[in-house]
Image 1 (tube, rainbow, N blue to C red):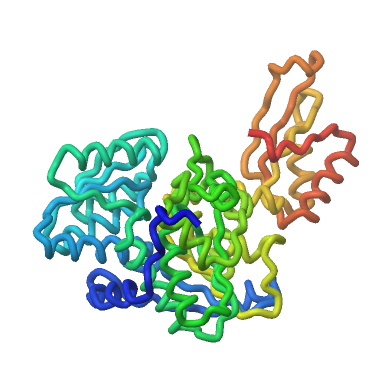
Image 2 (cartoon, rainbow, N blue to C red):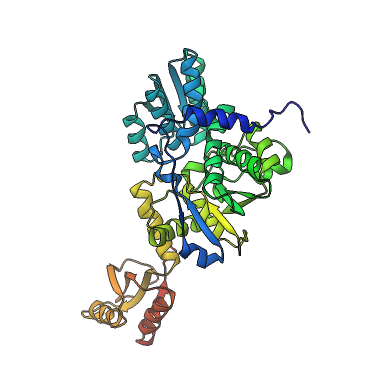
Length: 413
């Protein structure tokens, strides 16, 4: 083992953090809720940890307040951070509560709701960079040129210890659980939770989950050093850090049993499922744990399992994107391109065929200027709402049986 690498935090660090966080204006104890719907799908007893109901909509306030409270007690009154959104809000709230100033750098493409919320909690926000790594570099340079303290999102022992209070809470909620599933971005959350869980019961399985477009843990574990991505691409912006740290890698090596990867499609489906079955609005990062439980890569059959819903700051524009993607995957939204003779009555006839199958036409577009069409032909592009895959197939069969050439272009953008 490389002795120069930082040692993991101890449970005593988490206990001291818990004492600092006994302030319900900053952190509240979030509930757990049994989900029989999810449990039936995976053959397990599933309890959702509802940390997305935390102040600021995520766990991040725990670590931020644990650090900033100690720093302000030492006389520091100005803080700088970099964040895609949730850490930003945690730092802003913690600094304001401690009577300090905060400046947060956020990527230029950060969700507007997270930018607005960070400002509302009292921080000055600067939009810099196209990805988190660029934003991070700017924030660090800003701190170096001032008296401000930089608040790292995950490469900080006080941050990790603060996040660990969530793990202690999860254990108190359900000590009989077999598996806990935790999203991984930079690794601070799972490092704190795994330290707490393994302190109480080393037999509880701790599973981490990363988004495929920001996955770094497997390669980091293989190489023994943190791997950083030049670019990330995922709807789960809350875990799109593009890298972990030496501190979190060491802790993951020691305390995390398994790491799985989920696609954006799986995350989108998990968001929709949580809306439908649990009546919970959860962002991509928060839904990643449920996506892992539902995936073929994680077997929880017969277990008592607790997926962590770590964040609920879902931008409405992203929600629309997610719903369209998920409904298309379920075949409840169908886009069809039908080749017709361009003459009066064709659109009405097709519309009647679709209506007779009890499908609803959302919109239709008439296209004539296409090289593949013969003179006197056109395409009608329908967006249709169906009841699912079987119903969608029946609609297509009906149109084809009526003599039309039809292509399913649902996946085309």
